[in-house]
Length: 482
Ligand SMILES: Cc1cc2nc3c(=O)[nH]c(=O)nc-3n(C[C@H](O)[C@H](O)[C@H](O)COP(=O)(O)OP(=O)(O)OC[C@H]3O[C@@H](n4cnc5c(N)ncnc54)[C@H](O)[C@@H]3O)c2cc1C
Image (tube, rainbow, N blue to C red; front, side, top):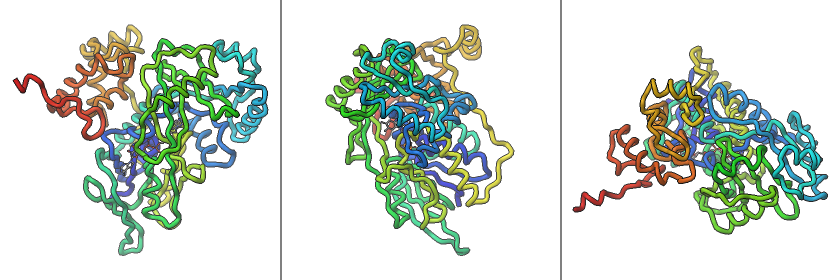
């Protein structure tokens, strides 16, 4: 029997897996998609919130502030891109000043360090391209930006290096609650890859976390998916602002953010739309137009340099807070449910908290040989001339450029495929190396990435997928029909 089974390899499941891998436990992660980070964790703002937004006393407030601190440290030990660029909440009219003061007080109550209000002159000194209509702003110096894919992948890789097993393309269909001969509860998970008996279950299934909770508990929860669409702009727009600019909600609506990404693009978003279908990540022309209009309120001139758009789904639980902890009527079943924003920021803190619950239930002891450090894929784009030379000397394929927009080489792609939990799809390569993330959006590099992946996996090019099941690029070769 497995000690712990985690449903979902998003940032929450992966962070929990990493923390559990400190203990002498058999841990299994079941993920219905073909890779880590295929759900909401891949489609969000990538902001490491400082923690002024959540209501004091909530789980959101607690885990946001703790998570922010942890990400500052973990970005170094687990080697993922993070930048403390600071964030600003703009009041775009005088009436907003009161709201800014309230946020300041809330942030102080949550224990957020360094918060202060900037008046217009200081604001324009910090961000010369901020809109002239901005009256004042709340400045949060500990706000940051992170690569959500790399952070999630880093947690998962480190967990796997410490013995956690990951099963992809394995969908959990149902959970049966059982009692053993000695009266202890255990669970049987029926999946597309067989059935698994497990002493404890961690429900980290994102927008589906209510489904699993409700399979084992009489005390029902309900997730309402809320879609957020984004515009991602070319790196030529990336230096428009240094900080993340939020808008104070006003009579004009909730507002959107304008932010640089940690890789140097500019992003505008998200919309907030209640939807029925938890798979609906479509973007719409109305949504994207709205973003362009709202984003233009924060800055003097918002460039029209969009290279792609995407949408993510918030797992909003009706109670409005995260649902975390052992379910009362199901011993050993632990929720990490309803993890909407600031879930990315909160992930490492939630990971440590949930792992602590499991440790106590199973009376687990710490591993002596826990590997706390992980090294990411070297980036030729960011390397110094000396580092580039050393990489090329170690493997000449680091001199062979595959993605010219983002300067990604064959050596990096091979590394992405061959490492722990390596890429098995084109999106897997993209998220690990940035090949295809640039201006041409795979237009030039796809024809090179597919053969590299096919060769490394020992399969035909026809079998290479974009991401999930059935997303094949090549239907057949025209010359085969001649
Ligand atoms: C628009 C938007 C913007 C956001 N911006 C920010 C931000 O800037 N900062 C921040 O801190 N947070 C942000 N968030 C929140 C953050 O992205 C989420 O809290 C976080 O990604 C949730 O992670 P998760 O692991 O719970 O969910 P997911 O990433 O969705 O992972 C759940 C996993 O469970 C798997 N799964 C589901 N059902 C099954 C099944 N039956 N069998 C097996 N596997 C299953 C899914 O495939 C998925 O991989 C944002 C969210 C959205 C939507």
